[in-house]
Length: 100
View 1 (cartoon, rainbow, N blue to C red):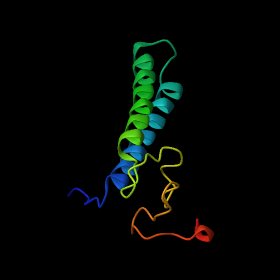
View 2 (cartoon, rainbow, N blue to C red):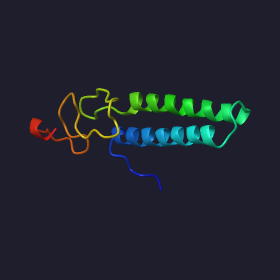
View 3 (cartoon, helix red, strand yellow):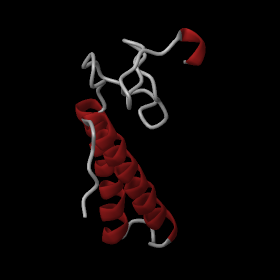
View 4 (cartoon, rainbow, N blue to C red):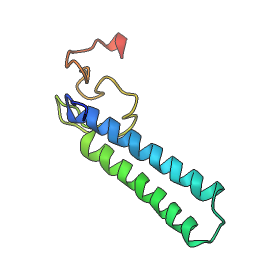
């Protein structure tokens, strides 16, 4: 069963996590489990780079504030408050400066 996402920001966070985990996994496999210079090693390295590029694209495309619509790329995995409009990304309520 697919999870029900409340906003595209949560979906963006999930996609960024999957791409990051995949890039780390393929990079580790390429570095430690294959011989350097082999076609499998090169394929895994390119796959790792492609996943990192995909992570940046997912962050730019989906990690946006659902209220003001501005992109939140830096710290997209840990941020809970929009740095632009100061709203909580999950509930939508205004957040005081002391809680940021």
